[in-house]
Image (cartoon, rainbow, N blue to C red):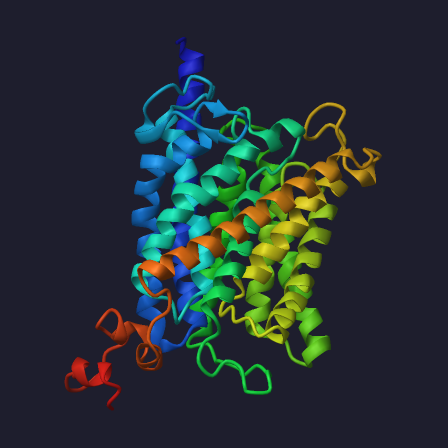
Length: 430
């Protein structure tokens, strides 16, 4: 390896490791966001699930997931090498090592399972969540990812484009979250007998806001890092479209909720920024700045409507996982087929609005539907299977007293004077 090539490889390695670390820091964002959105008695349970995401997600992706996702292709459906990072991986030709590439992809898989975590907050059995995490990181996400991103994946060969994961990560995670929320059912007291939704006040909106800001920061690693190259000249453009879409999503929610509810709704505004980020993830390298603003704004407003529809259907999603990730991820995936600039993806390719016809849009729609159905159906079936092994939902008493004490044996916030009698708390006594 000559000196210039060695320097290039070194710079790319540093870039990918740093952006992988930025993505991993997003788990802190998920933890704070979800802990702020749920009630105080369930904050510890959120933190524990995030540790499950990272610990089990990384190990299972190393043992099984990476091989299924990026191993040597079999019929365009799954990988057959790369388990335990061994076997033939010569088809993965990069300017970084395979271990560095694994680290970056590992950060992605951890983000996927964290999406589902929020939809089942405050009522999922911790043991059941561990089992589902293993299934998501070892089977559901890696196989879907292979179809789109791996060498030989059938959707990738058709021409599907998903730069950093609006479909593979967010739409997949969002529709999996929807299935999980439907299977596990709403929290006690969320809906009245007549079907009207009751407000469950968030415990700490400033905490949730800090979580959103951390996620916003980490998204620059999420999107820009997907270049896998420190010298790629599109990094700046990717960062700008990411910023503009997030800002547009949040701004649209501020204005829209002021008109709709007569007040700017803080949880909606927080989720509006995240919706914009999710929406731009597929096309951040391929669309113009103006298109990024439009995508972000549409995702923000659509998220509000999707949240209302879920509640009308008596589906309880405490943090808005499906509206933010499932709906916005779908919009962002289709937006590539509409707004991709000429030759930005590959020579001779453009979105419908730039004279490219319906070809790219059709492939994007096919891939999106396939990935979403895969995530929803597999999650539904696996949740049903897990329920035969261990109940997926905590007991009524555990839910009422809170998962922090009922499941983990410790509250998030201690009293200033005296000592807590945890046994009394577990028994529902004051």
